[in-house]
Image (cartoon, rainbow, N blue to C red; front, side, top):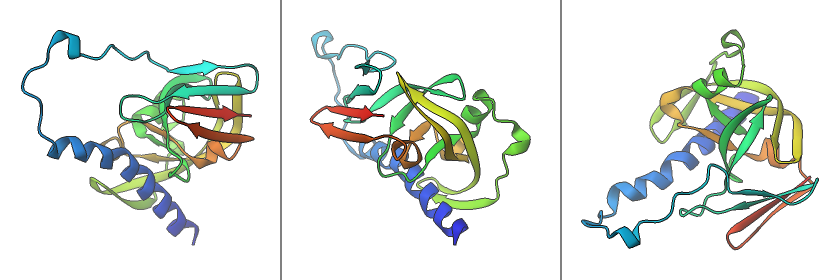
Length: 174
């Protein structure tokens, strides 16, 4: 039962990363862009730290909420995904975060938007953004070809007092 649940969680997390990209594949590209039409570069993190208990994230041009997280003491950009049951990271990110390769056991088979992949369950010591932090967070590690970055799912969000979206802002409260 646990393995089946992990399979569903990982599949949802991976689909959430790749499905939005499919829209760009099928939409026509604009042939010419004027300098005035080019959007300004986004900062690495759009998070505003609003005191010792809260963080406000601004939506990017695609409507996603991303920020610079501190995972196990190391910085990593991640996207909030309320539809993902768990935090999901790829193998390269896991290694950058200091998770020993010997602790990553790809024993779960998952189905992703890119096909079948292997996944491993790990525990992150801490996941933090700004002044808020959640300890002992469950996460899935997927192979690099199955996931391009980090999704911050419900195993982090359930550790907060609340989170809410108001227009182009997401507020995380510890």
